[in-house]
Length: 90
Image (tube, rainbow, N blue to C red):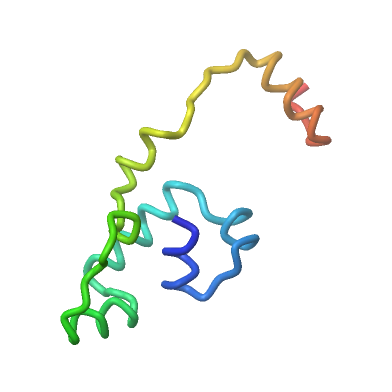
């Protein structure tokens, strides 16, 4: 996912880590489906296709299946925020 965003936008890895979440990635991919990034258009023009499964773009829904989801109580969530020095809802 990171390499896809770096190639499409020129953004740095740290910027992506701090600013891109799954809804934003989904919106970008939706836009790029109709307006492909230049490197994809050039590859298509020359008939170049990905050579390995790793280079093929995975759908957001497929990628999201591997993200662990855990429901936290409000107290546990506040404790997690405090652990990272963030303000809580208290």
